[in-house]
Image 1 (cartoon, one colour):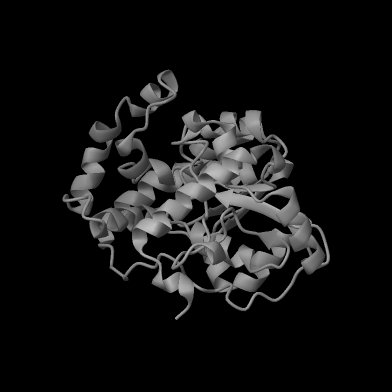
Image 2 (tube, helix red, strand yellow; image 1 turned 45 degrees about the vertical axis):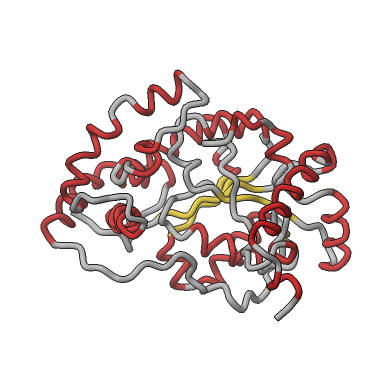
Amino acid sequence: MGMRDLLPEPLIGAGRAGFRLYGMATAGLRPDPDFLLIGAKRGGSTSFYYALLEHPRVVPLFPSANLIPKANHTKGVHYFDSNYGRGMRWYRSHLPSRFSRSKAARRAGGQVLAGEGSPYYLHHPLAAERAAGDVPDSKILLILRDPVERTFSHYRERVRSAAERLTFEEALDAEKGRTEGEEARIVAEPGYCSYAHEHQSYVAQSEYARCLRRWFEHFPASRFHILTSEEFYRDPQQACDDAAAFLGLPAVPLPSAGRVWNPAPKSDLGERVRRRLAEHFAPHNAELERMLGRTFPDWTTA
């Protein structure tokens, strides 16, 4: 056991606060992110992000896990969705400094990159416009999952967190009433954070074409690298190699690339509700295929 393992939680908390204050004080020395991983929620973005961090030329956010006991590297800061009111100094306080980038580049033998992954960015109505205004040169990564499976996984994550008491079908039926007017309010009141829009939008967050269209309005298509979670888990090394090439990095072996973060226990989805969801998503998936010029053979069909 190291010294950091003996630190009491209040001291650890104080340390985190100190890191953030230091990060804000040095925000001018912290370049914009090279990439944003914008989603999708429950789509494998956490596993994908941590796999990319194994690349020697991808560096973590600040502070890195080796500075905070019993912590993983931070994945995202939810700036362009829920924390936009904190301002760019706060956002940049999470990014590695030019000095740490230079040090990492010397160690890695080439330029290093940094980025963050906040899966609500895809669905949030203002995130794309905000990102385009503040970090216009960032590249965009997106990992999508079979919308039927993503929807069910999202619901089960809420149940595990003791935040959802309805059955799955009841939650599907309640979604429209729960979320009605919330997106319009977010747009009208930019500081407003909607629990229902972020956490109870099980179906809406799987309507990828509608969500992605906003991002295409603000970033050119050439700035996007889009893969599916099925592709990633089938061949994580190849998926990471492709992402690295898109980011301008060489392919390197990533020994833990297939590790699953935030796993959920398997649970069967009834055939009737599966068919209901497949029929709902069919036109949305068809529109996504037209937008991207590709098909999704691994996804549930009606």
